[in-house]
Image 1 (spheres, helix red, strand yellow):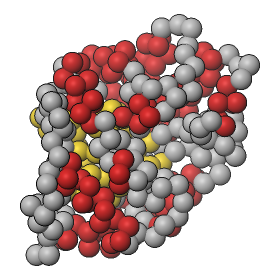
Image 2 (cartoon, one colour; image 1 turned 90 degrees about the vertical axis):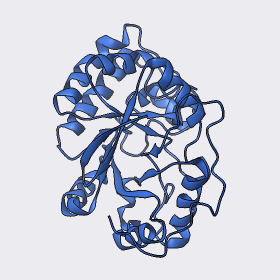
Image 3 (cartoon, rainbow, N blue to C red; image 1 turned 180 degrees about the horizontal axis):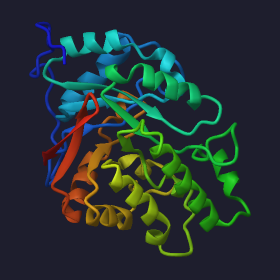
Image 4 (spheres, rainbow, N blue to C red; image 1 turned 30 degrees about the vertical axis):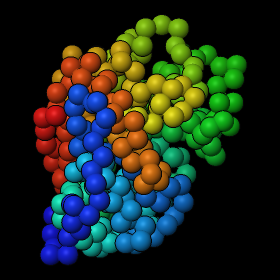
Length: 282
């Protein structure tokens, strides 16, 4: 990773510790500097993210804009940001989903730029409609009306396995995003998710612990405790993530996440550099 002499001082802004948190979380591996539109990476766009990370005491962040907005990603600008902020580890990433319109081209872009990327998130945002993500709020909720929820869950996790099978993802984002509008399966979640977790474990991939669910209608961490416990039993590692669409959301609810992680007995999280995973103690 490129480092320069023009680093921002870590003393320039006060560090905000996680109040009364049992663990200090140091990484946020799901962020969207562009939001949900193409915005070319510039220092003006990216520096506020570094400043927010420093205030929060985060040491390691990954930019993971959606592959459909890849035109805005500029690896040279990420390198410049690294040079200006040598106290931070800033990862070049992307979020690859199952967008039926754009993600075939997104996969080709990832393959072309694989060596420049540190980290690729994988996610499923589309079910049967090509023109609307099911997790759009509130409009996406209509996709669930009058349908068998267990069948929707089964279809969703099948699509996740198909994404993993591409071999292009380093980690799975918001694993049970399908619950976003509050719909729950009638059976045990373990019966629906176990095949997918085995698929993930066999490929030695982590899943993220995402605070984004706490600001969505479901008001619950992604994934649910039962899924986290199953993943732990299988030895699946974790990243920590906020799915921030503004630098103000970076590390959102990480104090709450720290308590959850401590209660569940998770003692390490993973980071990535050039797709190589490091498991680090909390």
